Length: 163
Image (cartoon, rainbow, N blue to C red; front, side, top):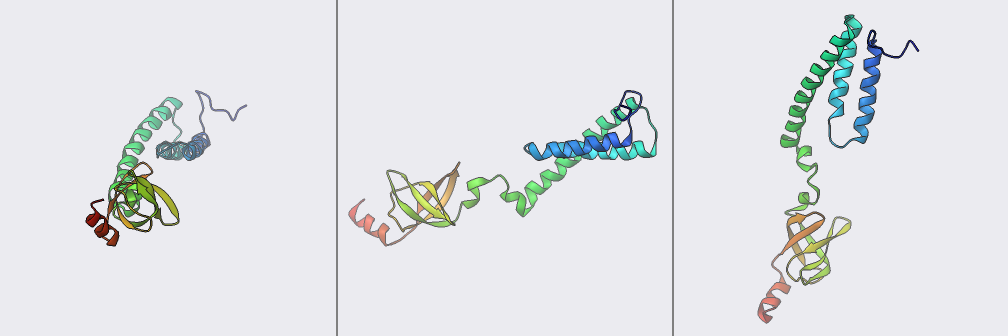
C-alpha cells in the first residue's frame, strides 16, 4: 500500500483527500467549522505540490493554516450574520415574525389559542381574543407567538361589558 501516507511521505493528493473528507463532514456537522479546515488542507496540498517539504513541517503548516483559516473564516461569517439581510433571518426562528399582524384561528381563551401565519397555524398566547380578530405578534417563545390586541369592534364591545 504505497498510496497510504506515512511519516516519511505525504503526497499533495493526501491533503486534497483530507480536504474533501472535511467538506463531507461539514455537511453533517452543525454550524460552519470544518470548511475552514478543508480550505487549509487544500492550500497545504498546493504548497506540497510546489515545494517538497518534510512531513513534520507539513503538519505544522496544516496547524498554522487551520488556525488562520478558522480565524479569518469566523470573522467573515460573523460579518455576514451581523450585516447581511440573509444573516438577519438565519436562526431567528419565530422571532422573524415579530411585528406582523395575523388573524386568530382558534379563540385565545385563558391566554392560549392559535393564529394563522402564512399557510400554517401557530400556537399563540395573549389576552382573550375571538376567532377572526387581528392581533399583533409582539414576541416569540420558541414556537409560541406572543400576541397583543389590535383595536377593533370586538375590543370596544369588550370594553363596554368590562370583559
